[in-house]
Length: 84
Image (cartoon, rainbow, N blue to C red):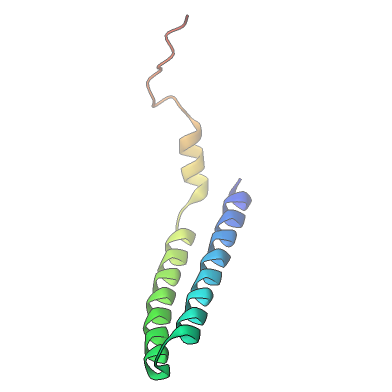
């Protein structure tokens, strides 16, 4: 189960990276001023990489074993089944 979660996060991470490169390309390609384009890409890339890194650090600090083990027992939830 943890492998599936890591695979899904890898797909999300690669998707976000692709979107970031897409945004940078379009800023550079369609900006009216090349100087402003490079400054904008620098600011965007800095903020984007900061958020991507903090997201990855936060994700890998999660103890998935304990989280999945505690969520698999439904004894702490009240029963809502009343029968027919």
